Length: 455
Ligand SMILES: *Cc1c(COP(=O)(O)O)cnc(C)c1O
Ligand code: SF4
Image (cartoon, rainbow, N blue to C red; front, side, top):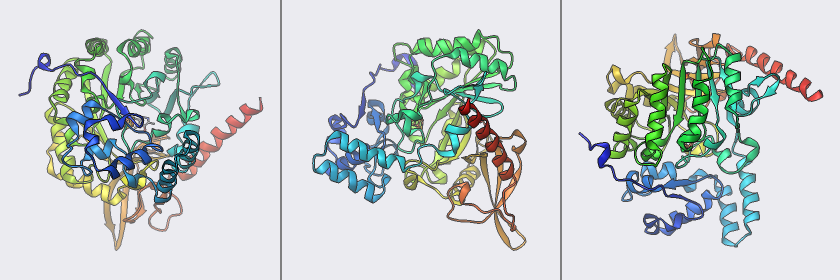
């Protein structure tokens, strides 16, 4: 058994990024080439770590392969060689900050900063006003981006939310008023879930978070059944629940939600079993569970970090041992350093299947591998043979049209494809079943936006 909560020694949050990472003692011992890689790539992709990640998660005897090091520190191969060279040359010749920033922005714009039509198509409306701090793609669940929760305790190098961390402000979904959220939920009674997301909403002080949550609890919204909070705090800063000066208030807030009869789901991001090993994460998990919250876990499959069945089986098993519920395995999004992390769909399915076979039913609550793409969440069910033909079988877990959910469909076998748009429908079909309707949905949303612009 592990220690009690009271034996945990308070740890003070220290954050490192491009401007001060060279002061990290462990970094000073690294090979200068690795330090340079961090500097060059860190000028383009966002980069932030903290003392917990450095002191308790990364194994500094295993650099550069250590999965948590790759997860948090920029690696040379995350940029295309010519992009790397461009920034390297600018740094070498002592270019101005302005010059470096312009070059970095140029590169960022080539990295598909907003995949899956997130910006245009999922922003809901209230009385004809677009609610920029929300997304509503699937009928039951409204995503809410509290404006003060758009950062994290550390940044993942694979993250698709990177545009909002590097000051590309036009991409920042932000909204101050929880009032609008309450109003929107009341007017959309089919929505049962609110998912607080970011960034990481648990970087917010408890006081701020409780302002949002209290608005929901006291909002008299009979359709609201579940409050979900998407967070990586258990992996990147478990002291958020233990020794931060408002940790107790946070746990009290969670208990208040559970006691009110609303299901509180912590959607916890874990990318590697190492993140489940420290005393701090174990005790934080136990404390969280005492509040009545359920912890559900998710992660993408990532090359260099977790692209093996053993790693996933170990991760699910450890999660269940701690009382968490494995929920999603995702395919890495087509954005940012995707080339570096990409795992082909067929390989992702092999990893899923390999891991699934190694664990008992209590771990098999997980669904995946799942791609969050424009029409919906698409699960790769596997490779099958129909007659003489090898096909990829898929199914929609969530659809932009709810009627698409749980519909199986087929694509030609393609070992290299890493995203839905690279797949061809099987059996000589011209389109996947959802394509016409999706185009129709988009035509409608664009034509209403255009007519608004005319007003
Ligand atoms: C995944 C996701 C949800 C939640 O889906 P569940 O299957 O209910 O967990 C909601 N909105 C968006 C945009 C999502 O990608
Ligand atoms: S914690 Fe989540 S939102 Fe933050 S960088 Fe990692 S994946 Fe992105």
